[in-house]
Each structure stands twice: as C-alpha cells, then as structure tokens.
Image: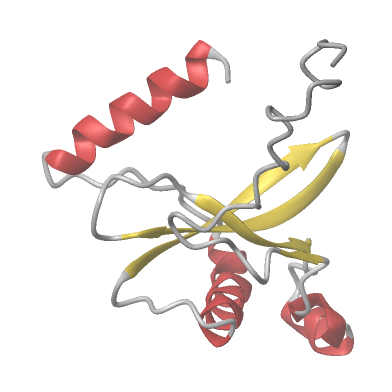
Length: 135
C-alpha cells in the first residue's frame, strides 16, 4: 500500500473521530442510481444499522465502475469491497430501458468473518525431507 493512501485513511480517521464524515458528492443526476445500488447492497445482507456503506466511482485500466465498500460501525476495521457495477446511464429514460445495470458485475458474496480466513497450509515441519534432513 502506498503512503498517500495510508495518509488519506489516517486523515479520514481523524475526521471521523471528530464527528466529521468526509464523503464523495455524486452529481444530482446520479443520486437515484446510487440509492438503488445501496439498496442492492442491503439486499445482499449488509445491515446499514451496523455497517457503513460507501458507494464510489472507480477507474481502473481505463474503465469506470461503481464500487460498494462496507465497514462495521463498531471497531477499527477497514472498508472492504463488497461489489462492483458497470456505470448506469445518467438519463432516467435510458436507465429504464437498460434494466440489468442494477446487477453487480462482481461481488464478494462470502467474505471471511474475523478469525476465519483461509486455511493455513499444512505443517510439514516434522517431515525430515522437507527440513533438508536425510534420515
């Protein structure tokens, strides 16, 4: 992780502890789709009462997507990517014609809970060949 990102997170944390919540301001034309995307995240099982839901634009490799990150309100966890969407049409009439924009193009549907990450590799420390010993 680069130092600019860490610095930004530190600054955001200082602001949050002072009850100031930095946010991205969406253009007025895009507020309706953002509300619908937030509802999709809630429908995925994220409780807005106990989790922050952050919806942001993201440009990667020249392609723009919308990403949803979540973070528990309790504790000092980081925002974790929950899902990504293709950009919806800005025009309301065109958005009605394209109905599949509400479906995420990527989801992290089964995030590990605290303490339940992936299984560690097997321990071969007792195997003499692995340790370089010839018995």
